[in-house]
Length: 109
Image 1 (cartoon, one colour):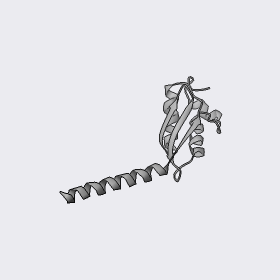
Image 2: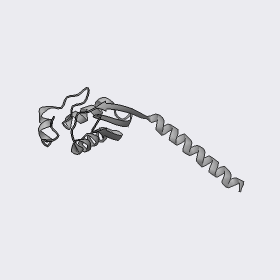
Image 3: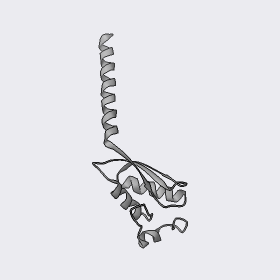
Image 4: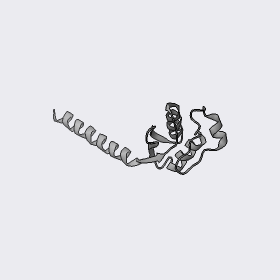
């Protein structure tokens, strides 16, 4: 009985350490991103994830994208650049006219 108790204790300890390491590797940022609709939401979140965000959630009402990312793998600059390349202005990047022309008319600002 005591051997399984030690095993459970060890597994719990390993899990806590792993969770702590993972949480320290994540940064969370909020980025203003222009957009209009559900299709914009999908495009914005997809672009952010393609640029290395682990999670991305854009709010249509507030126009704020919340991203979690590993700072050793990407940055908010890279994420904003990818979003601008997808056709959406961010607080620090402006989408090119070519990128805007790819969007449906609803998504063009």
